Figure (spheres, rainbow, N blue to C red):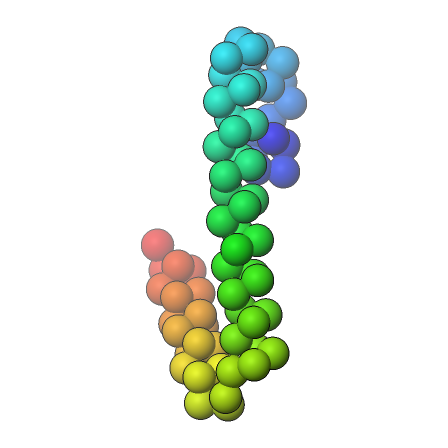
Length: 69
């Protein structure tokens, strides 16, 4: 949970229900990240150059938008 932004002093004060809830949420986040990574790997492995370039452009645009929030 620390890797997902929780501070150790805070975690030590969480109830068991909170730990379970946060652990489940971080597991879902990890699975979603892994699914996106697998998708990107598949596009790179079998996609044509145009599709790969389009995907890279979208990712870069998203990264630039996220940095201005």
